[in-house]
Length: 113
Length: 115
Image (cartoon, chains in turn green, cyan):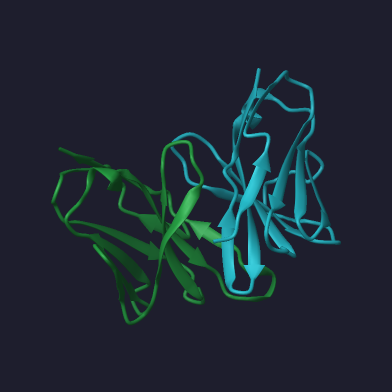
């Protein structure tokens, strides 16, 4: 089983649509959680951290369910510029794993006019 | 936010040669840097953790004699791909951890093509 698994995608949605991505992780001791976006041939960029209480940043809402080891990202009112690969990322617990990020395989989103 | 640079941004080399990639934290000190590799249509895979002044810690399956890592200062880590082969062609990305605040910043990546 992969440590971090995401929806296989790809997602093709029209502008203005709402789209949701799901992710599960296998290490119950994981400490922190993130969504990154990666544009083609570029480095990943942090989109938002994910907190247990759920958090929102403009059109983006992230949710975390520790009991189910499940993370989600909701994008409302999709824009053309949202087209990218979205990476679910987990930071494992301490010790020698300090700062070690484990990436999901990514879900490709294409927003079309 | 903090800036991490990589050099070169892309490189083409012949099979059997060695290639050095530099990763620099430009406006903060990074005691820990990470090296990742990304093959086409795949996600980032951690290769090794680089700690300033000590030996790097390699992930399972990554050959430490082939991928030499040197973290000689708090702002510079280098990855040398020795005796490169076509299967080493990939996108190599480094990241650096800024402890205040605790956050990891990625470099822009180096695209390596071995012919």
